[in-house]
Length: 165
Image 1 (cartoon, rainbow, N blue to C red):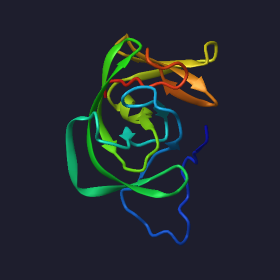
Image 2: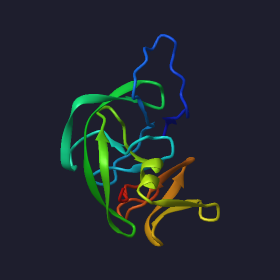
Image 3: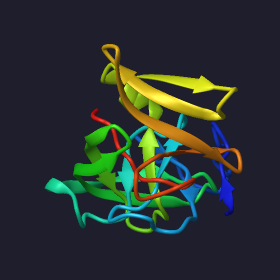
Image 4: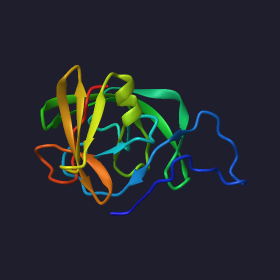
């Protein structure tokens, strides 16, 4: 698996300013459920996916929103919706998932989850993480090659759970 991520990625001098640019990470992985694996990304501004397939309440944006990938390339978010996936602790919903054609994989934004009252606890003992809200365990994650992926019953290391946001 190859991935590139540069927190606070500087814009090249020749690249024009794009106000309201969102940051996210582009990843490569194999699909292991209907929505594919979900990368836990502490630098992403929003939850993101490449396709509106499987999203409930999908709404196209009136105008696209600029997105900067981890490798510095630009893309456009064309709409958003909600995805429901079976996680390790039951069915979970990820709301306001932005659709970014060209994105490889799915991105779960830690900051978006935290704004919805979700806590994330990493464990050095298990090399994993758990998501909690109000004392209730929502989802778990496993580390693979330095990245954390949400766990689901369908997937082993690379996984595709979601959590309410």
